[in-house]
Image 1 (cartoon, rainbow, N blue to C red):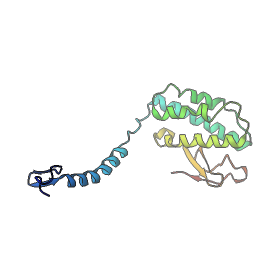
Image 2 (image 1 turned 45 degrees about the vertical axis):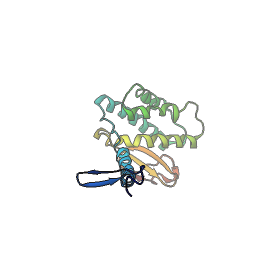
Image 3 (image 1 turned 60 degrees about the vertical axis):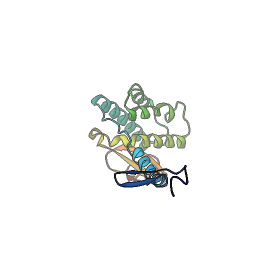
Image 4 (image 1 turned 180 degrees about the vertical axis):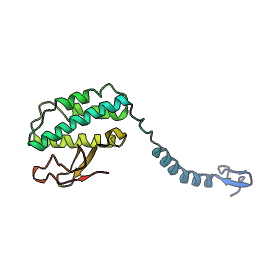
Length: 178
């Protein structure tokens, strides 16, 4: 198409390459999804934990282990004082992973819970939030995350053996998560 015949068309030449508005649109349509994909894949990684933050996470893991041990002994909602205290210690932290975890004090471990099944669901939700943190420091390596497909719940426990706190009849049901 000649420029004189169609004043709306646009053509230019750069370093021996001839471009028209149509070819520019094609290139733009091709590059836009690639640029968006690249931008979305460049998520900011959380900073490593400081020694004091690791200590706080270890206190949460110890309190979680206490809950796990109580559930292994009897089928009732355990005392949540130590886990709430440990989570309260995270509330003034600035690390993104710790801020998200500290919200569990009010969301998953509410006062006055009486329904055991609802507590199991809340503990599994909490464990799902805690699981990625286990991978962020070697200090947490003695803890493992597990998932039981029968009850569809996740838990964190010390050591490698499967000790399912959600299914008294199936204590060995579950798999260690990678």
